Image (tube, rainbow, N blue to C red; front, side):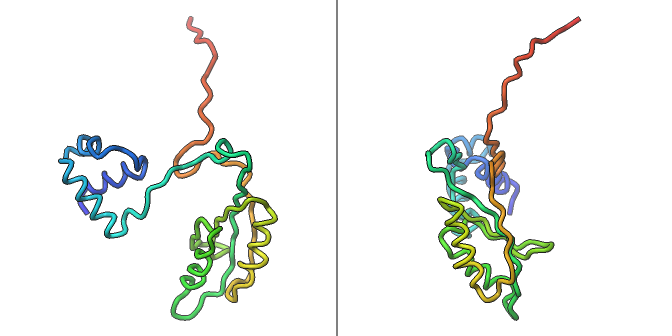
Length: 164
C-alpha cells in the first residue's frame, strides 16, 4: 500500500464525510484517483463502514446503558477463540468484541436500555454459551473520549492575563 493511500485512510478515519474534492487537494491527487482508491479500499474490506460518533446523552432523554464484559473462555481445538467470539458478536446488542491478553480472553462491549436488560443478556445469552467459563461486567458511567473524539468541550480559560 502506497503512502498516499495510507494518508487517505488516516484522513477518512478522522472524518469520513470529507468531500472528495478536498481529499484530492489534501493529497495532491486527481478526484478520479481518490474515487478509485476509495472504491478499491471498500471492495477489499479495508474500509468497512462510515459512522458518526454520537453523544447519546445529548440526543435522547432515555440514555443507553453501556457495559464492558470481561469473558473467560475455553478455546476450542482448531478454531481457538474465533468460534465463540463469532457466536457472541452475532447478538444484536453487542457493539464490539476484542480478544485480549491478561486475565480474561474476550472483552465484549454491549448497549442496552437498562442495567436489567444487560444483566438479562449476561444471564440468558452470554453465560449459557458452552465455552464461557466466567464473566465480569463493568458498567460505563460516563464517556470522556471515544474513537479519538472528546465528548466534553474544553472550557474557556476566563482568567485575565497578568503581565509585569
